[in-house]
Length: 148
Image (cartoon, rainbow, N blue to C red; front, top):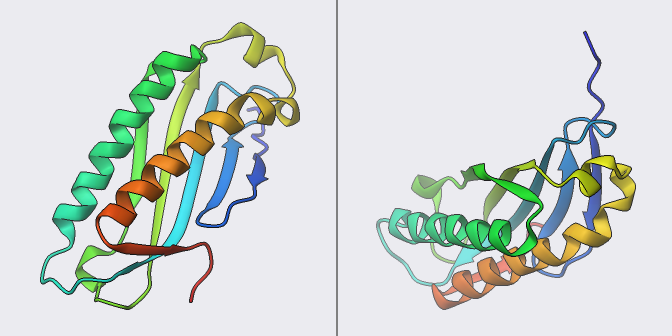
């Protein structure tokens, strides 16, 4: 059995903690983007789930655009989106995390060492960051990479 060695690259940001990772740095067939932040809803409502479902749909759509535009990844992907909607309250911070698992199909990317691919993948990650940040701000949420 081959031992898997995790590898990740942190990307600086003001609104999110951003990470490009793989489950195996030598054979990085699966690459994932991780975007996490503390969000603060500015409007009080009984149910924040509609906002979170809308955000997940936006993430799914943007992931499709990234796959189409880069040509690096297979069309099959997994999104793990976690936010405790039931515990959200106005003006209280809540942790939100999105992981987007992508299967690499580009031979050039597969043959590179993992630490060299950050320059190729930082732009798609920044696009996802910008899309999520704009969507959350339109929904009246504040974002902070660390708890406020």
